[in-house]
Length: 177
Image (cartoon, rainbow, N blue to C red; front, side, top):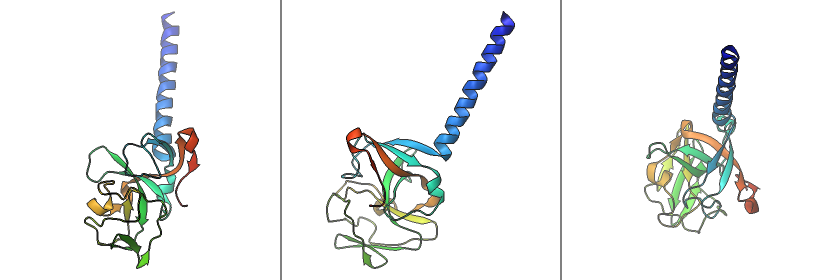
């Protein structure tokens, strides 16, 4: 009887370890879920929304207006959900409340208002692996983003949000609109 218990215990332990390894691989290399905390992406995303994000997309070419999950450059063990505004090589200017990318006015139909404060980022030239990200909430104090901490490196991008899955009344594909 002891031998049978030992065999079952090791079989169960092996199953649990395989499940944990698979969960780790899926979460870090295939897809993950994110929970929205805060108001920085309003009106697009709201507090407590649950998002589905695709990890391999971060290794491909990101697009302007993709919503990404990034490792915070200023807060330990925290992630931010932001929108990609500038791509590598882009020139970003914020003048008179408007955002310009490569001297063209950026049409932003997803923001909380028509005025964007420059904060510390009136002009930014992005290097080969840098991205400029901002929250959709452009009200004063509405978002901590590249206007505050500067561009982020591609390595800080953890995944690209593809769907809002909760609440059910707001299920939709996110990103380029």
